[in-house]
Image (cartoon, rainbow, N blue to C red; front, top):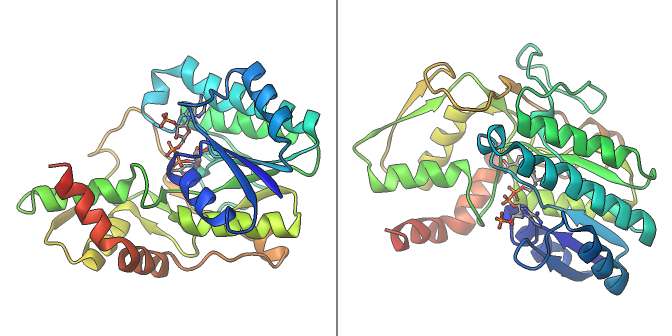
Length: 294
Ligand SMILES: NC(=O)c1ccc[n+]([C@@H]2O[C@H](COP(=O)([O-])OP(=O)(O)OC[C@H]3O[C@@H](n4cnc5c(N)ncnc54)[C@H](OP(=O)(O)O)[C@@H]3O)[C@@H](O)[C@H]2O)c1
């Protein structure tokens, strides 16, 4: 099949290209080649490439900056999705759109997970734009897909694990304070790309939660990762109140992959197993990226 990947140079986009090019014809685009907020350019590209599937990994993902760059966040996350949806409908392609756990307010009692039928109620502007983007996709044909990963990390781009590693490697003598009262289900972008491939193969439409199995706090995730990486570190738990951020985050971001399980296509594994494999595959690259950047 022909697959167009928007946001192809982002964290998830690179892994989607890596996985999907094995069995499909891929065209990957990113902001430096084509802005998804420019409808005419997008339309021309889609008419020329004629994709069977469009995977939308493009987004304005800086959660705290979304609180101040509201127009930009809305344009990329909502208008950009609207453009991709319209192009998909005109072309007869299937749109696979990536949303987020941050569409929920996190008020469920921990550790009760959110399922796909729970009503979103975002507490940040980023979450609001992503929820609006979901509504855009739901207004289209039934064949389209919305995926909700959470707390994503991968070997490309920026993420929480890389931030933790940088702090530990550059200043092993300093305490790292990490929030220990927000719970979530981390998602390795490479495994998500494999899950996307499975969804493509089975033609299943609708909303899917797509996170690793199990849950943890940011503190537990950082501690497990740094221990697995075997880098010296001092890590200390703190509360969300002790670590204020511009955007509010849900306390409970635990998602259950109920729809994937019901359809027998859930390939997501336990989050600790993913971290073990991530570290065993990329330990040297991750350390190298930090020492090179010094
Ligand atoms: N990261 C997480 O923890 C997380 C968690 C849950 C859900 N998600 C969702 O998962 C998806 C992928 O996230 P990610 O972590 O891979 O994000 P990412 O690394 O920030 O990648 C997003 C890509 O989209 C590009 N982009 C931004 N504006 C664009 C525009 N107007 N036109 C075309 N491309 C544009 C970015 O380019 P520039 O870098 O040049 O701006 C970047 O390459 C997003 O929908 C995100 O909301 C992420």
